[in-house]
Image 1: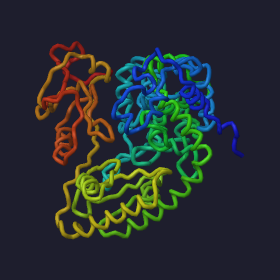
Image 2: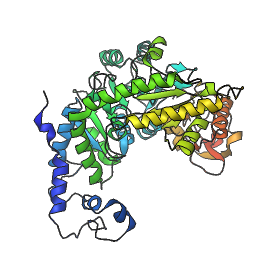
Image 3: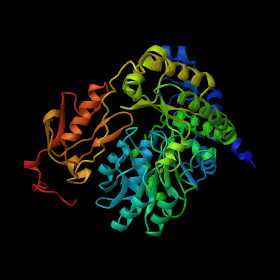
Image 4: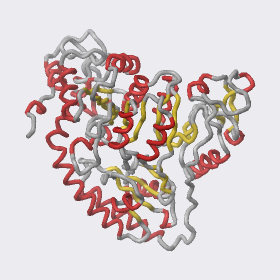
Length: 497
């Protein structure tokens, strides 16, 4: 039975009322509700500017909500199976920063998989917490890292009973999950908080054919990108909580430190509206796209040189649940890399994929995906097969090791240590003072406090040679490393944090 209250959009409704009241604006923003002539207004129309207001009387404040934002967040909590929801206008990144800073203080331990997003490492720098890394399942056939098993999580929990929390990715960028229910129960029994990065799982809350959502698995706090798979505007996300383990006063205080003091009313309104649509339409529309996705997967599997990941493949490897709205398409058997396929699909067929890796490409489907979209993808893949399969006799060089660098210090210590700039090619053996990563997906190859190995440098060179861009702080071919001679922590041997 649907709750009629979910048809309300408290913030969006009040925002429209304010725009329609034709106020005399002596506040910011400076466009004064779109009273300026500029090409953006010509393209979008004035309404987008009318809705871009800055918390006037009656529209509530995000940092201390007591009115329509509070009402909208409560409706969101109920729709997303949570006790409380917090609207985020700085993306899921700010939710991850806040949840880790709330859960673990300086030098306290937090258990997590090594294939976390860069925002998690930034949270460790800000909080001063110490990571205890778990090696995820590694699929060398596809060249990706997946979720973590219960057994690996249990070993980490048993070895580090003093850890404050465990952090789980639900799901990974590629749609694979961990044994989140079993891990959560065991962690709670051990007195630990359970945190989830649910950036790619906002739609899990609205269809039981998708993997279990974090709140239903008993997780204490989850950050979810509503904009990625549930229809809100980019940069709008939510933080979901339940139970009595979370210090909500500390959490709100942390969010107020991290979020903008001038939050976008457009982003808040889009969360309000997306929640309503997903609540009433999400299940039916996801059901329909799942049917299309399964048909497309079968058609793609019939193309020579193409392999598409399906639930049978995932389960055969002992993995857990899989989001069928992720099309993981292996193209390396065509004799091309995923990077080459990604570029060709965009240039020749005007198809924009989510990302490429050495072996594969990734297409993300949502309830807004159409049959025509999938038909175009299938036609394009047939064309790639026709032009490359058995013509390129030599398979592309593929690179997949995921051997994690040795840790010397916690990330915060290395981040604040004295630094040197060294050419990337000469950085082997140095202690990283910054993150080095290929983006997307934004999973760091090395983080502050880890020793840069020759293998890491080979990985970076491989990605750069294949057209990817290295994300680092400098643009002069150098990277930042710890100046060990002027660093009191440097003793020439491994440190125990």
